Image 1 (cartoon, rainbow, N blue to C red):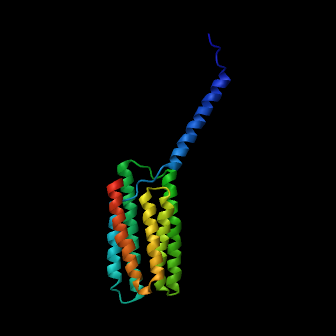
Image 2 (image 1 turned 90 degrees about the vertical axis):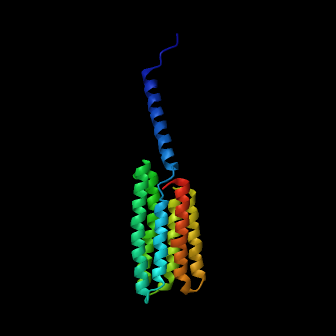
Image 3 (image 1 turned 180 degrees about the horizontal axis):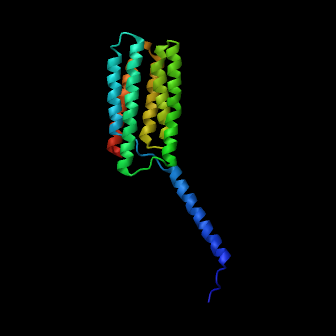
Length: 200
């Protein structure tokens, strides 16, 4: 007949098992990917960007051009936020977990920097630099947030940065065209790909 296991040792093993389970759960949460990236919503954001590029090219002054793009950015941000919340709710994905927070922080820091730099460039009346800044910082945001999401987000971010470098290296008059290619066509293609591969 086997000797009884001392109560103290049983309690110790139970505590250790609980600690191991907590460690495994936390590791899984850290390694999880944020899959509520909007597909259809991203494509709609691209349509808004394409419309902004067309409307922006017809504005008589740089301030009017900037106003068009700022309005488009606000509308696209609202669409993107609504699409993420809707997709997460439909799929039963939590938006308050560590992966979601890391994804949001990765996006937020470069976008906040973009707001500040936009104001600084507008104050200095340096409109020609804005397309490159927007494309590069949005690409940086997707790369940073994409570390916690599906690979296509990181690929899209890298392509946005390529477009940003294109805006830097080409004549300033092509800035609006680069914006349309990035925030319009690239966003549409990326959104459709996400919708087909990862849903909604």
